[in-house]
Length: 174
Ligand code: ATP
Ligand code: MG
Image 1 (tube, helix red, strand yellow):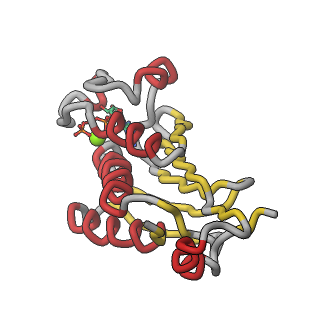
Image 2 (cartoon, rainbow, N blue to C red):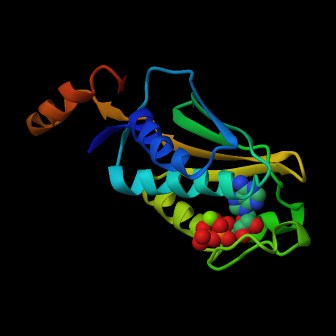
């Protein structure tokens, strides 16, 4: 189904922000094309996992900023925190099941190591990608990119309703 990613993200933030008083949430919407094709609950799970990590691994609080923008033919979402950061050598393993970074900074922070594996799987099922950049003790930015909705011109008649619903947001491919 066609879903508005901004409304999904705003709902997730509303549910997550009751878990903290020391973080400030910001949403920066830099494009009006925010429609994606996908499963609303699964996409909500992606941002729940990323935002709950941003909270959990920023034990001293700070800003959590979600930026939504277009890059090429993709819709991108950055989830940025000002927390512990991730050691460079951990990054290749980060999205594997049950992998957790073990160091003294975070030994007391609980978890199963599944959140990011689930993120990766759901994003992949939506033909998207997830990447991360991070600096220790400065923070981390997870970027999810999803295909912008595209429809071929002159498609099947049955597509018409969907096409109308999406028209405000799609790029028509000649
Ligand atoms: P779960 O999500 O299953 O409760 P988890 O949070 O440990 O457990 P993941 O979400 O998969 O598992 O994250 C894997 C590891 O990556 C974490 O243990 C943590 O060390 C590191 N990590 C994830 N997100 C961040 C972040 N925003 N900042 C710093 N480290 C992070
Ligand atoms: Mg997690």
